[in-house]
Image (cartoon, rainbow, N blue to C red):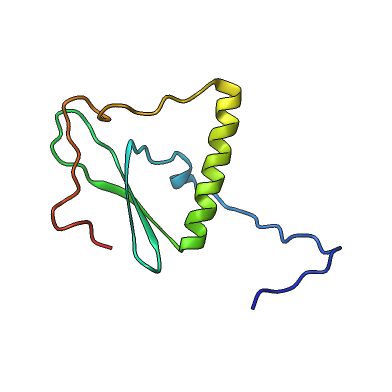
Length: 110
Protein backbone atom coordinates (compact mmCIF):
# COMPACT_ATOMS: atom_id res chain seq x y z
CA UNK A 1 0.00 0.00 0.00
CA UNK A 2 1.46 3.41 -0.95
CA UNK A 3 2.56 5.64 1.88
CA UNK A 4 0.17 8.56 2.41
CA UNK A 5 1.62 12.07 2.62
CA UNK A 6 0.36 15.00 4.53
CA UNK A 7 -0.25 18.17 2.47
CA UNK A 8 2.81 19.91 4.03
CA UNK A 9 5.23 17.02 3.45
CA UNK A 10 8.08 17.66 1.04
CA UNK A 11 8.69 15.06 -1.68
CA UNK A 12 11.68 12.79 -1.07
CA UNK A 13 14.83 13.93 -2.87
CA UNK A 14 16.89 11.25 -4.57
CA UNK A 15 20.56 11.85 -5.25
CA UNK A 16 21.65 10.16 -8.46
CA UNK A 17 25.28 9.12 -8.85
CA UNK A 18 26.78 9.00 -12.36
CA UNK A 19 29.92 6.82 -12.37
CA UNK A 20 32.71 8.06 -14.65
CA UNK A 21 32.70 4.90 -16.78
CA UNK A 22 29.01 5.46 -17.62
CA UNK A 23 29.07 9.27 -17.92
CA UNK A 24 30.32 9.23 -21.53
CA UNK A 25 27.19 7.34 -22.56
CA UNK A 26 26.55 4.63 -25.12
CA UNK A 27 25.61 5.62 -28.68
CA UNK A 28 22.61 3.82 -30.17
CA UNK A 29 20.80 4.48 -33.44
CA UNK A 30 18.32 1.63 -33.16
CA UNK A 31 16.25 0.13 -30.37
CA UNK A 32 14.14 -3.02 -30.30
CA UNK A 33 11.27 -2.91 -27.79
CA UNK A 34 9.61 -6.10 -26.59
CA UNK A 35 7.31 -6.76 -23.67
CA UNK A 36 5.67 -9.37 -21.53
CA UNK A 37 2.86 -8.93 -19.04
CA UNK A 38 5.42 -8.07 -16.36
CA UNK A 39 8.04 -5.94 -18.14
CA UNK A 40 9.21 -3.93 -21.12
CA UNK A 41 12.64 -4.72 -22.57
CA UNK A 42 14.57 -2.09 -24.58
CA UNK A 43 17.60 -3.42 -26.48
CA UNK A 44 19.81 -0.58 -27.76
CA UNK A 45 22.19 -1.19 -30.67
CA UNK A 46 24.18 0.53 -33.39
CA UNK A 47 23.55 -0.23 -37.04
CA UNK A 48 26.56 0.60 -39.19
CA UNK A 49 26.97 0.58 -42.96
CA UNK A 50 28.82 -2.48 -44.24
CA UNK A 51 28.36 -4.39 -40.99
CA UNK A 52 25.81 -7.18 -41.49
CA UNK A 53 25.21 -7.83 -37.79
CA UNK A 54 24.19 -5.44 -35.02
CA UNK A 55 25.04 -6.31 -31.42
CA UNK A 56 22.96 -5.19 -28.43
CA UNK A 57 25.11 -2.77 -26.42
CA UNK A 58 22.67 -2.02 -23.64
CA UNK A 59 19.49 -3.64 -22.37
CA UNK A 60 17.06 -1.77 -20.13
CA UNK A 61 14.21 -3.65 -18.44
CA UNK A 62 11.29 -1.71 -16.93
CA UNK A 63 8.04 -2.44 -15.19
CA UNK A 64 5.03 -1.35 -17.33
CA UNK A 65 4.32 1.66 -15.09
CA UNK A 66 7.95 2.82 -15.35
CA UNK A 67 7.90 2.35 -19.14
CA UNK A 68 4.79 4.54 -19.32
CA UNK A 69 6.44 7.18 -17.10
CA UNK A 70 9.53 7.02 -19.38
CA UNK A 71 7.32 7.53 -22.44
CA UNK A 72 5.77 10.60 -20.81
CA UNK A 73 9.17 12.05 -19.86
CA UNK A 74 10.52 11.43 -23.37
CA UNK A 75 7.44 13.03 -24.95
CA UNK A 76 7.77 16.08 -22.67
CA UNK A 77 11.46 16.47 -23.50
CA UNK A 78 10.85 16.13 -27.25
CA UNK A 79 8.16 18.83 -26.99
CA UNK A 80 10.62 21.12 -25.13
CA UNK A 81 13.40 20.39 -27.65
CA UNK A 82 11.15 21.14 -30.62
CA UNK A 83 9.89 24.39 -29.10
CA UNK A 84 13.51 25.56 -28.83
CA UNK A 85 15.15 23.97 -31.89
CA UNK A 86 12.32 23.26 -34.34
CA UNK A 87 10.46 20.14 -35.39
CA UNK A 88 12.40 16.89 -35.47
CA UNK A 89 11.64 15.22 -38.78
CA UNK A 90 10.17 11.74 -38.49
CA UNK A 91 12.24 9.09 -40.20
CA UNK A 92 10.57 8.28 -43.50
CA UNK A 93 13.26 5.89 -44.67
CA UNK A 94 15.50 3.14 -43.41
CA UNK A 95 17.97 4.33 -40.72
CA UNK A 96 20.84 3.49 -43.10
CA UNK A 97 20.09 3.45 -46.84
CA UNK A 98 20.16 -0.04 -48.30
CA UNK A 99 19.86 -1.85 -44.96
CA UNK A 100 16.63 -3.62 -44.13
CA UNK A 101 16.22 -4.30 -40.42
CA UNK A 102 14.52 -7.44 -39.22
CA UNK A 103 14.59 -8.94 -35.74
CA UNK A 104 16.01 -12.46 -35.53
CA UNK A 105 13.51 -15.13 -36.64
CA UNK A 106 13.58 -16.75 -33.20
CA UNK A 107 13.15 -13.35 -31.52
CA UNK A 108 15.33 -11.65 -28.95
CA UNK A 109 15.80 -13.38 -25.61
CA UNK A 110 13.82 -11.77 -22.82
